[in-house]
Length: 154
Image 1 (cartoon, rainbow, N blue to C red):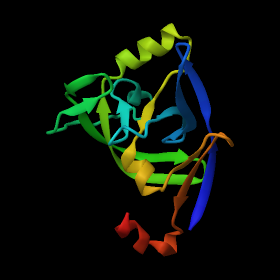
Image 2 (cartoon, rainbow, N blue to C red):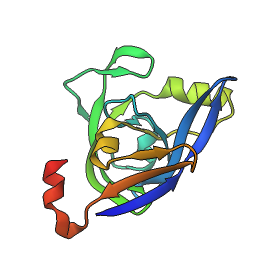
Image 3 (spheres, one colour):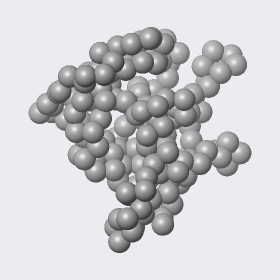
Image 4 (tube, one colour):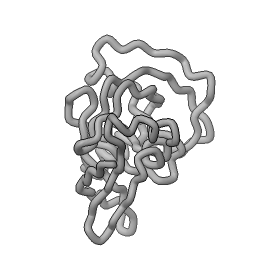
């Protein structure tokens, strides 16, 4: 089992709140991710993803996504070749794409960095995420290629 450690970036929201951000790569290009332990699934911006996947192919998601300030919203599915978080590389990830316009507008108004995706429960659970607020780190655990049997468990 290997562990990668990412520095957390705390983004001040209003006077008494914050979001947690980590930096990574989508298909080799820099990306910013919000860490959302309350999100059941990781999601990506359906418009912004085009800079990471120029020949984007979308499938309509049969399920409506909920959360991020709304009850339900249409979503699409695509495959992201690679998401890199520290030393961890997630390959051929079946990604949910939603409209993150309202997030972008809020972040622009607060002069915060652009967000390219939200890391949710699916990836946080699979890679046994551990947030250490004191050390300001996110640790992700993953198997060596020879430990492929662990993928079946998670």
